[in-house]
Every structure is written in structure tokens, then in C-alpha cells.
Image 1 (cartoon, helix red, strand yellow):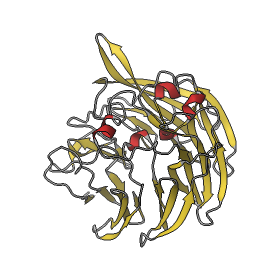
Image 2 (image 1 turned 45 degrees about the horizontal axis):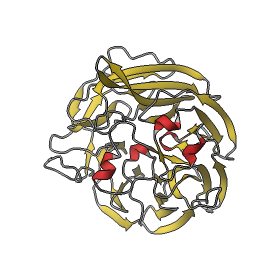
Image 3 (image 1 turned 135 degrees about the vertical axis):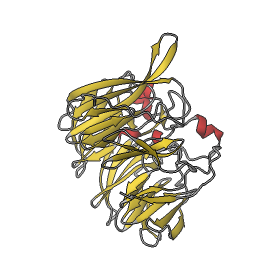
Image 4 (image 1 turned 90 degrees about the horizontal axis):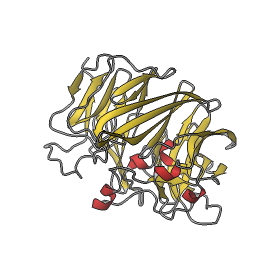
Length: 391
């Protein structure tokens, strides 16, 4: 995560802050119970402002001084409606408000072993859900509002803040709130129906909710916002002949009332049950285009971009990140693609980025904090890197 020239790198239950422009370590602070793995099946656990870095840590969110790393603020997760303890899930800051969600204890994956790896990839893997969303004044530490889900669990990877509202997908299945693990398969979360919910970010009052038909979605589901629209992108399998293949479905909704604007579907031409994130690629929005790799769509109409197909080639775990004119991803090595021409170029040929969103275009740089050293891939250089444009 980058903010004001600092790169905040989550490590093993600790945060390391470095100068993004020269790599100098500014501070290194242990934050117990802050480790998260399989982030794509959960939600962001850090948020940065000019003065603080907010980090989810078990049942709290800790405010670390951005300049020194010293812990100065502590926010507690509200207890559940039944009085049970909860852990801090979603973490975001807008202006002077800190937003969070509450999950069951242990719902967020935080262990390093083969078992979490088996629970990260492949088909129909459970997602982390929340039973409440809340907001604090980030300076006074006073709670501003608390929304308690009652109909069904909130799907963590769909929580989205934009334009004075916070949105998410909420299950119709009440049993999803009582899962002891706090993790639920999408086939259960949306199988009996779901709502797209909009809540006023200042008051916590529901602005609107509308039922959405996402019953076909099996593996993953994201929500994005741009230009007055909400975009839900999910994945499923579809049979062709004797084989199953991964398909991505995209839905566009009006953010004012949740009405459906358009839908699109695409085959990835990849066999089902892959183990390198074939089901999990996060879409990206640049300007008036929604990129659902390998294809691209006009935001407002859903019309496919002609002659655009961004085939990664090489090992393709992890999701794309994007700047105004290029996107970045893993294709064996760190790779960039010109969004106008589709021309690809290797950033390095001796390293690899991590298995999620690990290439960060920010502050005029391309930042790649080290995230490959836990993998069995034998790349010769394992180090954090920063690149500046030469054009």
C-alpha cells in the first residue's frame, strides 16, 4: 500500500514502511494477529491516510503513526447482536471516517501451511462473510453507526465505498450468518437469492436494496464502482463437450437505485478447477472501460471492445493492476501491457510478483514489494523493487 511517498508492506504479523523512492526502511513494527492470506476471498485489512496507517488485528483495528510506526489509536469491533466476540474484517478510510466489518473469530485465513493453500485455489472455495458493517470517527474514536445484517451474510469481497455510499452483496440465506467458520461457499451465499445494498456512508441508513439474480455464480464475486455504475463480476463453470470451462459473468447496475443496466458473459477457454487463480481474477476499471481479462467492455453500454484480447501467456496467477495507460500482471515474470495497443513487455525476467495484486503503480513509480519468497518457484532474485518510467 502506497501513500504520500511511503510504501507499507504487510509482513509476517508486522508492517514494514519504506521510502518508496529509495527503499530506505523507515520503520518496522510488529502487529500481532494481522497476518492475512487468501486476500481475494476476503477483503482489504489496511488503510492509509497522511497521518495514520490503520491495520486490522484480531478484534481491533490499530492506528499506527504513519511517520514512526508507533501505535497510537485502537478501535474495537462491536460485539455481535448475541454478544459474541467478533474480529475486524473490512478496513477502509474516507476523509475522517474509518469503516470496518465484523467477522466470526478466525474467519479470515491467517495460517501458513499447505492447508490454507488448498483452501485458496480451485473451485467453489468458501469466501469470508461479515455480519455487520460499522463506522468510527477516526480521530475521536467514537462509533458513528452500526449496520447489523439480519437476512444473510455480507460477502466481504463485494464491500465497496464510493460517492458517499457503501455497497455490498448480502445473502438471502439466514443460515450463512450462523456458519461457525465464518466462511461460506458462494453457491450458498447467492443460491437462494441476494440483495445489492446501498447504505449512506455518513449515517449508516439504508439508501436502497434490491434483489439481484446471481444464482449462477459459483466461485468468486467482486463489486466495483465507477461513473455512477456498480459492476458485479463473478465466475462459474460451464460444460462444453466432455469438459468444464471457467466463465466470467459481468453485471452493471445503476448506483442510484440498483436497476440492471447490462450483462455480459465470457469463456476463459481454461478448464475448471484450476489451481492458479483462474476463477479469481479481479477486474479493473480505467477511464470508460471495464477490463475483465482477457476482454474489455464499455462501462455504460457493456459493448465489447473490438479486437481486444489480452492473453497473458506464462504463469498467470494473481490479478491485474492498472494505471492510466498500462496494466500490470504476472506472466511468469512481472509484465506490462499498453492499454491502447495491447503490446506486452516484460518488466523483469529474473523475478516474479506475488499471487495477488502485487504490482502497484503509484507516485510515478511501479512498486513491487517482495511477495514471492514463500513460493516454490525458482526465480533468482527475491527482493522489493521500484521502477521509474523512461518515457
